[in-house]
Image 1 (spheres, rainbow, N blue to C red):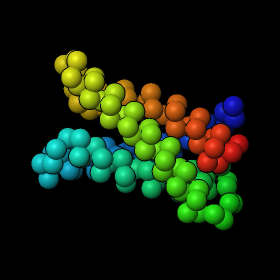
Image 2 (image 1 turned 135 degrees about the vertical axis):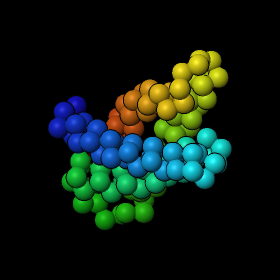
Image 3 (image 1 turned 45 degrees about the vertical axis):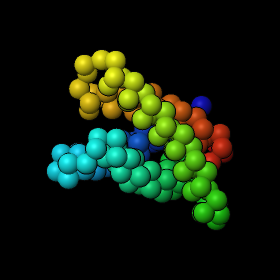
Image 4 (image 1 turned 60 degrees about the vertical axis):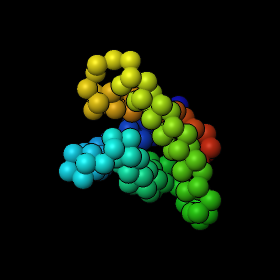
Length: 125
């Protein structure tokens, strides 16, 4: 595993996390949307940010098949999102841990999935 790419992926992920949490908070707390719908909007904004930053900053990828590559990234991200939402639901249902603490825990778990899958498939290290 390339530790520099892993670190960069983490930095990009952190920027996506900030976007994700911000959008989730705005939707849930200010727009009063359902917490899982809010989580979905946060995810969508974060994934677009993460794709472009990972493509150019983390992996220095010059593949010109942007749509195909983004689709791959999106599929992996959707799988990650399904894992994220499922784990978030289970953690919320079975514990009294704060929603945002649960979201942070789940995000760390899903990070490993996202890095591994994108390294091996989307950006092919």
